[in-house]
Amino acid sequence: MTDTLTNSATAAATTTYSVAQERKIVTAIPGPISAALQERRRAVVSDGVSSMLPVYIAKANGAILVDVDGNQFIDLGAGIGVTTVGHTETSVVAAAIEQSRDFIHTLFTVTPYEEYVRVAELLAEHTPGDFPKKSVLINSGAEAVENGVKIARKYTGRRAVAVLDHAYHGRTVLTMAMNYKAMPYATGYGPLASDVYHAPSSYPYHDGLTGVEAAARTIAYLDKVVGASDLACLVVEPIQGEGGFMVPADGYLPALQEWCTANGVVMIADEIQSGMARSGKYFASEHFGWIPDLVLSAKGIAGGFPLAAVTGRAEIMDASQPGGLGGTFGGNPVSCAAAIAVFEAIEANDLLGEAQRIERSLTAGLTALKNKYNIIGEIRGHGAMMAIELVQPGTGDGEKAPNAAAVSAISTYAGQHGVLLLTAGTSGNVLRFLPSLALSDALIVDALSVIDDAMAALTTSSH
Image (cartoon, rainbow, N blue to C red; front, side, top):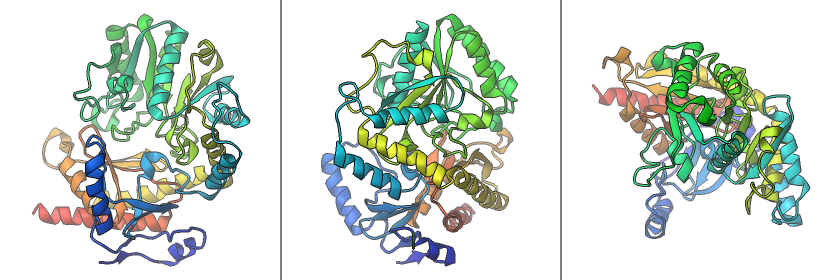
């Protein structure tokens, strides 16, 4: 079985990539080698670790994944927003190799090194706000959230943590209590951490509220249910990731920041998925005129190497006593070298512009699909962080009832035909597009043609 696209743009791209930037399916999905690996996995890997598509990857480059059977997939997930600059981006690979030849580990809290300092300088330069900033580097997004909360509690001397409905912040003991959805992240893992409160968010497609109205609703909850005097921090994703790429109404986030500042509450931007050029700006907060007190980075910061950071106002970051922050692998020198290369690649390759190009191309293609299929309720997002919410027409609630079955069917069809799609949404009814910024317009057209075929098949089967 062969399913492939070639055109002049794709052919030209092969001269600069080690893998041809094209979709190609040569076996059943999964292929025989992947199927054999899946059997080995069942014997030794916990069932709690699941995979969306049971194909085993042997190589990746640019926006293409190659599995062990030789199938090539257009990757619209980028490791859930990690390989933003592209798989195996040349400068990132070179920086990591060079650093690993010098030294791989010393532990910054024992014997420091310049690479950690340089990453902190770059974060201070590129995160929103022109005030003095400092950083701590750690390993993962959830660890960044944990440290952000810890730092805010130390600075304020308060206990309570507030998050928003539809939020996702991680799988650790604290962060799973901060998530909106229990299944699968918290079910059976209790008791959950205490003093975590869930406030209503801004979800314009469903609540119809302006930013000012939605902020007033959130603030009323924080005032009445939590009490500002007990609240250490409010942790907010500027564009909610796992929740379904919800984009808040204009004015919502600045209004919350104004309230937090007036009440001594630290407002934290969880930019773990939305940061590092993904949205067409370095950090998605910039789209909303929001200058947070602390910014959390991870995922795309090091091109695939594990690294995360908490960056923010110097006086908040310095509230912790010496030795209170850190960790054995936090700010690993190889990861730091990769992160420096990522910042340099963003500038050298105009990746902010590339994210904006992807938004234009995806929006045009998704709009054409929306005009063709009435199951698409809304298109939303910024840059290479776009989504469509699928609904059930004619089912009431203004024809906005969630259509999770369609999302499941479309993502399955896409995977079988060489397109890796991520799902999202509290109700499981959102398809999210989170590609690397190496994704070409030709690959976008091809991927959307597969989604078009999936929707056509779904429409046909429903009649």
